[in-house]
Image (cartoon, rainbow over all chains, first blue to last red; front, side):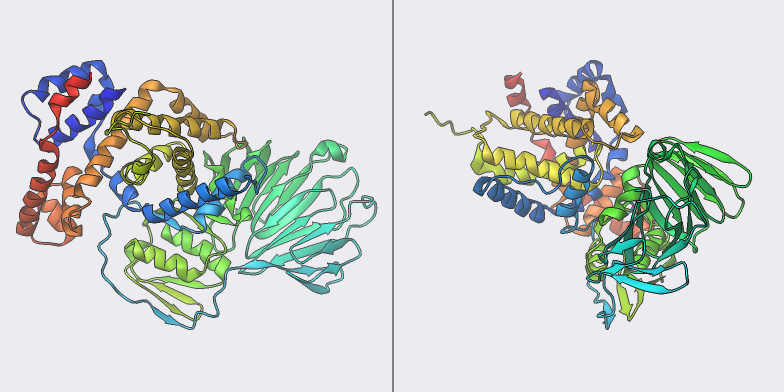
Length: 390
Length: 179
């Protein structure tokens, strides 16, 4: 293994044409020993330089010192217990502090100092827990952090609403609506124990109690929601179904995410665990874990692909995670959470792709200035609720 | 206790960190996502170095230790992760492959050394040399950066000179003594 480090030098020397006559046969010999050397191409590795320069080493060193101090002063305590929430925990602890964004096709930073124009940013805040609850009789209740609300069938502490589970309804069902505005998010526990996380700009329609022995059906009117469905086995084998104007998703008991925004031409359904069937007028697809179906609303075509599940569902745990996502798509996500509008002035930026992680509690300015520091955008302008990227 | 002069210990940690941090993070990012998770993992490796009384007889054995530790941590993390997907399966497979491990280190070490060799250059020269190493011709570089062809030629030859100086005086002799 020790040879590898020496070989790396030889390869670089060969590339920059300073390999000596004595070293040439050495490299040849190593190629025999490690055939993969022939496949290593410097040209293809150069992209890595950008990733290196995107790493904030000072911050990392401070984090190391801090961790060392914490561990050696008091007993180690764990914030999160187990499972993939650890993933999220780690991302929150580091990611929130450091907006790690790197640009895939850029080179090193050529920092030209331009000052952003900012007109009254007080109006822009990260989103919070809030929703509007519409009851069966049409009356409306605002749910917001700090206010407790109790209806006939449910209780809310302003962060979530929990429906009582006793007694499945046998007669005509009453429906409630939860409407999440831009800049909001909410969590609901339905009467069967199914949990739903609702993202910004989303509306969900559901019965206050499900009819015994019948398919449990809710409607994602629009927006994005993550479902952790209470298994059929607990409900006399009844299926759970999420309907939408263009598709329905049939499940037995599982976790999945549906993204069906009004301003997008696609509906994405991502399966985390279990099995679901996505049905449209003309076709139906069965998804396996970590598969995502993409329903194109323009031609009604549906395709299935493998995705990194974490990126699709991290929003419900306070993180936006993007992997190779176009800037335009990212601005859509940000505009929903910060309730702002984006204008991309430099059209070539639209298709630029990004990889990065953002904590949802960061200020929009912090995010923008980070993107600017990386020379991804030259400058930005904030004018009340409109952000222009230049 | 005998203290040898060329032993690498705690007091050198900052320098070790400066030299290898990015490379280790990038190596981890071949298996783990997001990047913050990779950074966290590599930071833990350094915290471990601070906590334990590790000394290394030379830089190569230190490097071997760093890459191997990151590899093991990645492996354990993915193995015990609840979200089992194809991505994780692939990552586990490639982490188990020793030959692939060598190749990945080779690649990372190449990028690391090139990065450090050109880090000191001004931005423009960095851009030019990166594009040139990527295989672009002078005219293509000029077009990409919107600068004159002659400027590309001048800056490029200056940059290569600096780069070559850094790799030319390699201690081949010492190497043969080590093996």
